[in-house]
Length: 243
Ligand SMILES: O=P(O)(O)OC[C@H](O)CO
Ligand SMILES: [Mg+2]
Image (cartoon, rainbow, N blue to C red; front, side):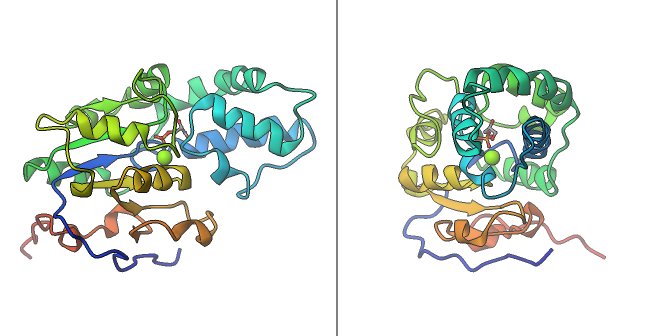
């Protein structure tokens, strides 16, 4: 995989004080499960699921993504968005509990906590999926100050609307936090748009299969959280391990 590490594209006016993490595809590898299940469903209709459709779905609330899926694949006469969700659900609920943390998550979260940087999660996932996905990752998620879910009453519209990030910025202990002081980590184009619309800075960690044209609105693009350098954002540096 080529290294994507890019220079920060905007000049920071205000130092970053708070961090918001996306979840699916950023903290945990669940986006691959969605892809796998959608491939299986489309195969039934003699069609293939590919990476031109994936970016239009990822990061969005379930029903919004389902509508895109049936419309764009032209299977709307045979499967409604609601039926698609039911069919997908049966497979996903068995897969989610086995999800893994993405590379670099543990090191980064523990580092930010150890340095007193307030952190939280803003995910399009609803409560039931969140519980399944985090079953084995309680330790990491317990380090988050709060979690805002896609079915939260304050999240009127899912990503790419800024609702979820603005709600997340309000709920920090010392909130509401000025969006200019917030750094968001995202993998999805809809999430990057949502964070930029909220007035926040964004580090994008995209799947390598995502077309590079989607990278343009992020402030920094990385191949992996392992490549994140806190000093780029005037955050406390990782400790150098003595040899
Ligand atoms: O990427 P997230 O965490 O906002 O999750 C969104 C959906 O549940 C999956 O695309
Ligand atoms: Mg995501």
